View 1 (cartoon, one colour):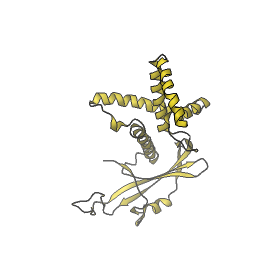
View 2 (cartoon, rainbow, N blue to C red):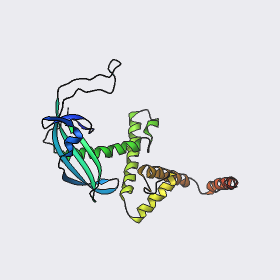
View 3 (tube, rainbow, N blue to C red):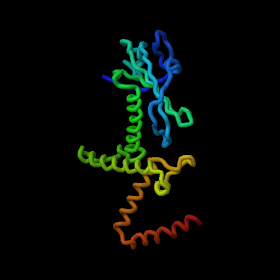
View 4 (tube, helix red, strand yellow):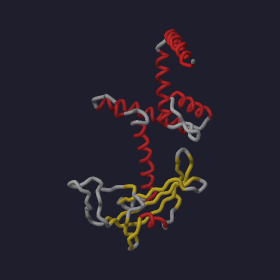
Length: 236
């Protein structure tokens, strides 16, 4: 089976005939420009480099074996180490990935880091489906078709918000701030909106429009008349 995993620089490996820390082995690696990418909404550049190492030390599983953590020896693994750096156009490095893979060399390092880059996009989607958006853990549909239908609608909402997030026109920026106000979430000064806040704002807006569409305005006026004096009392 083939795999791509992220590695820690503190791992000890064999590289070029000697034993050393992985972070030291990749430190001397020269990286070449790969492609332009996007990092937190900013234009950035991705650089890639590759070398070969051998994992030779015994593994130490996190889960205990028979009540104790034990080293588990195995055959040495010869793996590709693929290093990716994301740099802003100013040259400042904002992200570094050290990846271990046994994928054949027919697959280029540039393509492998692209896979990993898109993996984080998928993780962002999962985040929106869970606590940051649709709260999929709380859904009460019991059949697979019902869950599939709701997932389809939730995915459409995610696509809508992603499209809005990528727009930079004055109208789009004003809409983002309006949705954040509807969401009730507090934002940092340096970050006026987030994807989860936009998602919450869209949900509030659509719910309000649906409620207004079912009422000719009379009931809404009565609601305001009931609430307004109580707000005034609260202020005093």
